Length: 201
Length: 397
Image 1: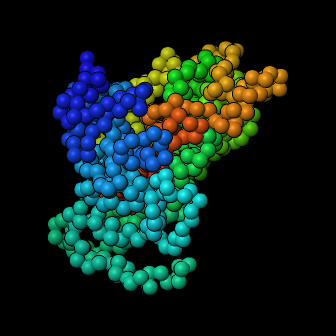
Image 2: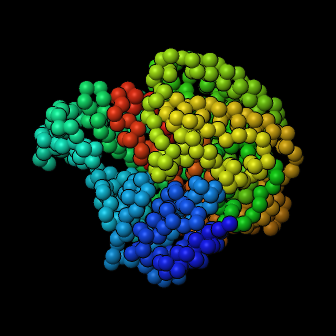
């Protein structure tokens, strides 16, 4: 019977992964961003315990963490095995401020699409290769990334209009094999016209 | 907009906005659909209308002060969220809660599950135009709500669990009230099945609607009753047992089709299983303490604080500075009414949470919404939406 320790040794051998000692209760492994996609693929398809489900992606900002050394941000991926019920695994990628980019795994796990959008929204970490990296929870007009430790919690922003969504709808139609030949006239409005009737105008 | 479909045929599609404030969207959800007549060709969703910054707010308080915020995640079964959060922190402390607390938590957990499932099925039926089952389902729900009032002092946002115990022990006559609520739950289940099972209109509206395969559901990270409706017997109460769930006699309910009807029927069948668990748990409910005795985790009782200096210090310390959770990072998921509610917790060893990330079960289910409704009718999208039981409170946090 294989255990998550064996999976960790395999990851260590293949991708130079390191055990995250902060997780004293479960198994968390740090991989470099370059190997993230391969490591996720390995966990999903090749390892002895297959982790078919991506449970969560969480961004972490270590700016005010006491005695923290190393890159400011981290993205943590939680996986769960369906074939081997009860087995869990976490991958962690450290992200430094000068290169805020992590490869996407949305091609492997369908729900990574929204989770990665959320991390982008809240922390400003980009996911290279993501099909549609927009904000998820915050408003389109929102400026900044609120879950960063240097974003003041009481700060207010003036938001005036709703999300447009028509370009995204066209994009979805293209994915489904449709071809847009004449766009809706609302798509090409100029800003003034768009804001007319809203609070700002 | 004018488009060419995959066969090269010209179509005139109408973009139609649904939500965010719509009677059938249960909270604030919005989707934009490209309509061909009454058929949805493509759909994109937008969420965030109820985003209150849960994760930012909790960083400013102490660990115990997170509990009322968790009420506002899935407000149909608030106590379950409290317990899920407290369980995660207790695991980080490495403490074991007393037996009576475990059994009480199982009871309130399962009663909350019954409540949540009743709301979901009742609202789903209401959205399809049937008002009778709504009343059948809300009668026992009201009885459980009355139990909450007596037990916690609140109906909706209870904040009943505490790290290392419960807000207070059960009241006199609790068992009798629970048994009465279980009886009316069983009666309501009979009535609901009589309304639903052979109802031609209901079956036409839900059977084969919003189907999803097991592989796709897993890839989208579905959990809970929605995943089980697709035929995957995955339940954390069995897979990673806690509070002795494995010692109770109950079954994991599994559907076959993964359609809208299965998702509702699985919920009704789960109510039956919950009733079974609560009945067994009531027999195990023996007198004893509900809180752990450790002033570093659970505040000492009022009685101690008034008579004992250590107790007074313990109360001051845990109220002013907060309890100190061991430094580290941890993810722990708990089976809630909608699926796996997980908390990724980062602690720096101080009295305030450094970071708490919530993994809401609804988010993954709503992320697959476009796949469920595309190709169906607009009216079907409402049946699908209510079958998924999207709770905007936990979806948007």
